[in-house]
Amino acid sequence: MLDQSPLSRHLAVVPISLLALVLASAQVRPQPTRRLITQAIDESKRVELPGNTHLEAITSNDRGRVPDSLPMEHMQLQLRLPKEKEEQLDNLLQKIQDPRSPDYHKWLTAEQFKEQFSLAPEDIETIANWLKSQGFTVNVINARSVDFSGTAGQVRHAFRTEIHYFDVRGVRHIANISDPQIPAALAPAVAGIVSLNDFKPHPISGVR
Image (cartoon, rainbow, N blue to C red; front, side, top):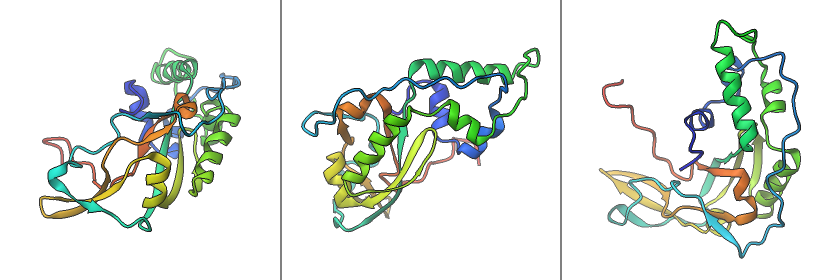
């Protein structure tokens, strides 16, 4: 799965503009983020990102590999903060929701959030450069994700997983057939990849 903490799972899908509306503390002085990527990238040493394959991407639904030229737009590489930064963020969320706290409802701007709760600049640069080296276009770098685009062939080469067509209840979809892999050196800073498939989230039962 992506980040295991409930807080991180929530933040991973919330746009940075909305995060700015729910995070606060004018009193917090930004501290440098500890680097997580400390080894050189070795493409022969890889790890899987578990939980990044859709449940419907199964053999019985598989209709074969897509063309390598198929565009894959706006994929999201979800980033993982150091443990101490996650704890600071958790503490901040608690303060802004506590009317007794001096930080109650003191809003952070998107820029302040990015400054306080992003990976170390060196880690971000390493990840962005690796994506570019695989032929991807890096579109936007956010505090918690990197938006990038490419093709199915580039995904297959970079993440060691194929993109296939799947027929699910009469509707054609595309999805990766296995959990993606990344160089082990990047693993401490990467939680997972979003948008390797075109399945839409289903509403929670009873909610419309």
